[in-house]
Image 1 (cartoon, rainbow, N blue to C red):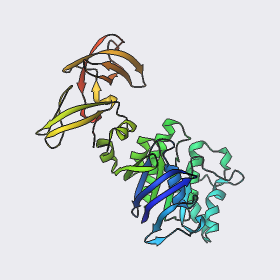
Image 2 (spheres, rainbow, N blue to C red):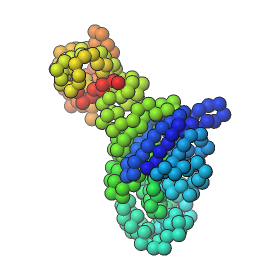
Image 3 (cartoon, rainbow, N blue to C red):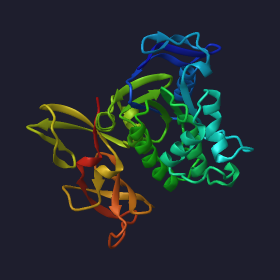
Length: 332
């Protein structure tokens, strides 16, 4: 188990990471999720031993404060892979094994390449591979010495969207099949929720919320976190006997009776028959839907419409609004 207690990283007078506490259990994948500049990569680098830090970092109760990077038993994968361009695929994967004194290098290389979906790629040069294939090689190289903790710093961010989504699913399977304990840094919600058992949301050098993907997505701790997680509008509502009564109609939601603060993602409101109408102010066409900005009598909100809507919604026209509970977040 990795344990971080009160970890602080300073650059001069600026605290890039401030008094962070976090734990990662054996076999668990924790995602550090946050916007650029929030300190998540600095925290990962401090855990790796690449940044000087105040506070405690331990593994199974053993303090790692004075342990150099190469003796911590951690694997590292960065967003650009940092492969050796003069080596073959097999040569890259074998590098860490030889450093660790592994005897059955060839067998372990074949095992790892099969695990990451690159069986038979050993003789190829890494410069001949696609970006996604290179990241698979980087993962195989990091996993080859059987690290007790794998640290991944934005491992998929350099890839295009479709490839990133595909590789995130493969990486999730790989981590679970291998039972790897991992810390993943990302700014992408979908990536974090695909890869991780738990998600820790960072903001301004601090962890503001930790929970399962569903807990974080459904119950952001505050409005700033909700905005980062895609909420664009906020309304007050009332919960009564498992029903939330909102300005856009009632919807079932298991909550204690009383007032609630709702965050609405664009998918929370559909341009479909409902109890509220509004005036469309802008439309943006996406791949499979149209995103609308709608002015209601009390609130400016975002909504969605099917791309097949006939006729397509246009600005300055009226549209009904119906509530989709899957797009709701309960604040706090």
